[in-house]
Image (tube, rainbow, N blue to C red):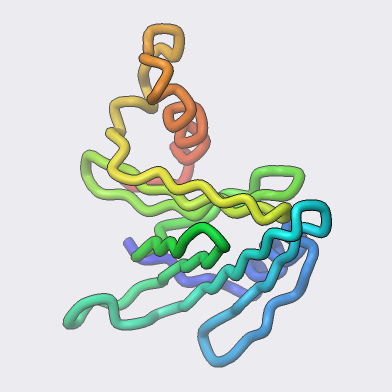
Length: 144
């Protein structure tokens, strides 16, 4: 299920990131700079674009000094106080999440099994624990 970003969503994201976006048609671009580390990050959101053939949806892209990341067909967003936003996409058995923060931090979780969300965190292997904890926040917005 594709998600369309509303003006309220854009205002929420801007508030968390502490800056206003440049906007054009159905897209918004935020340029962030961490004054301490001098890192930069560019977050772009595109609403209702052609993703493949007759499939339209939203696309989130993040460009940093260290790489370029995309999340297709965003299903929803979760504000994570005080200064991060989670962009979530899912499939029947797997989740994908792109997290962006005001201090130019960016994390990508891809192809994470939904089974992790209902796991006992104390029994998980350490390498999957962070993904399980972060993605457990998404349960309220995910479709079955």
